[in-house]
Amino acid sequence: MRLWVAGLALCALACGCAGPAPVRRSDRIVSTNPCLDAILVELVPPERIAAISAYSQDPRSTSMPLDLARRLPATSGTAEEVIALKPGLVLASSFTAPATLAAYRRLGLPVASFGIVSSVEENRAQIRAIAKAVGAPERGEALVGRIDHAVADAAPPDATQPSALLWLGGSNLVNGRGTLIDDMLGRAGFRNASADYGVRQTGVLPLEYVVAHPPRVVLTPERGAGEEGRRVALRVRALAASKAKVTIGRFPERLFYCGGPAIVPAMQRLAAIRRQVAS
Image 1: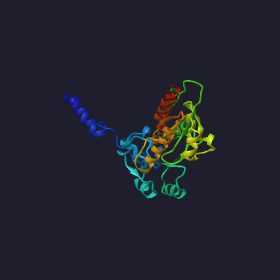
Image 2: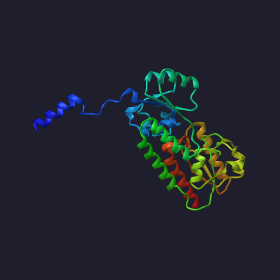
Image 3: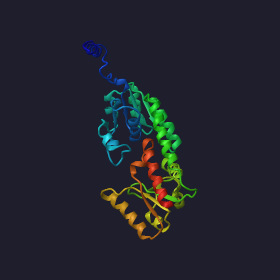
Image 4: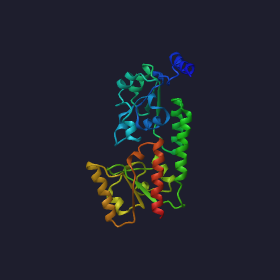
């Protein structure tokens, strides 16, 4: 027994086998976009994350669990903050300023840029590309599998396609065609009603038009605080007063900002609303 304990002690001193090796700076990652943040935390352990974007720590813009986001370091996305961390990889949005990207590369920081996805298929490809960039292809496939399972489970119970309109926040913006949430609506058995009002892409739609000709379903954010919350409540009251056969479906804003893991609860919520309409 004494020899065994002594052997463990020698092993710990000689090769550090008593615990995991420290993460090298070259393995640490900075993400500067909340949609990339939400995917990154699914792919690598927290010790590999040098920083995420500050947007993920704001309940109004996060697409990941807020308690998890607030346990991680964050930056406001300035080049100076990111450069000071000296990460081995920077995950950036395709909308990042060219001067910022040039500053990263001038100082030798590897950068992987990713754009906005507009379909579940594009989302799959993006997850796999990010997983490859961070050296976690197996975790990437696991996340893709979870998303595919959620999409399959949300398949509609029948062939009818009730019209649905998705309002964004407390404004009069509605979601148009050619977006990820538009694709998810179709997969859950809805028809995006935005085109019925002449809105081809995401754009402004006055409340009066919707009250005069309501769709079968209106997806609206959960009521928040302040002026935005009052606007959401006004829309709901106006639709209720119209006596039209409209199902009001609460759809949290954090579920339509990004793809990645947010697709799972988004599809589950859409499926629940679709079952409510069918019943």
